[in-house]
View 1 (cartoon, rainbow, N blue to C red):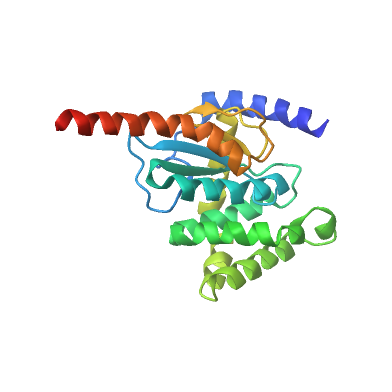
View 2: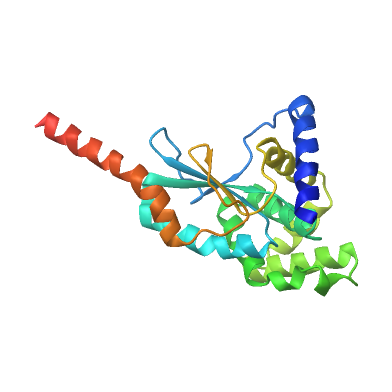
Length: 227
């Protein structure tokens, strides 16, 4: 029922997004590995994650393994979709935008911090906490994960509108792509089936091997032709 309601919500928001959303100054998403150049030959995975979603957490390790396995042939663009039925998904996503604005290398470290201590932010465990108390827990997590220098960064970031606006853009961008659950994956612009379910390393090999092999064959042909 919740999923059905969110599909309807995403449809309504998505319809309005196409009509009203002014494009942001820069494309949405965090590139992994940070600084990776995405050129026309790069196989691009787009992942839509919620930092307090258990399925997003379970999907990260095999995805990271696949990215390491394929090296420079594959890159990741991670989009945040804070789901409305995860009470603290929005403020958690804001924290990632705050950190990313300062240091893209720290973004995925904080994401992994959320995944490791995700239970701290589940609905049942936090039902008696106020929003400022939740934000303080996130600042503490960020400081523990990234170092004391990030305490002020996170606190001040929660007090401005920049991270709020960036998180809204991420949500609206996801809706504009028709994404309503996490994790959802696109490869070179095409959505993979079974949205909302993790994909293991074997599953990634089934998807990516056929895309990588033709490139290798073409490179070999080019070498032979040049001889």
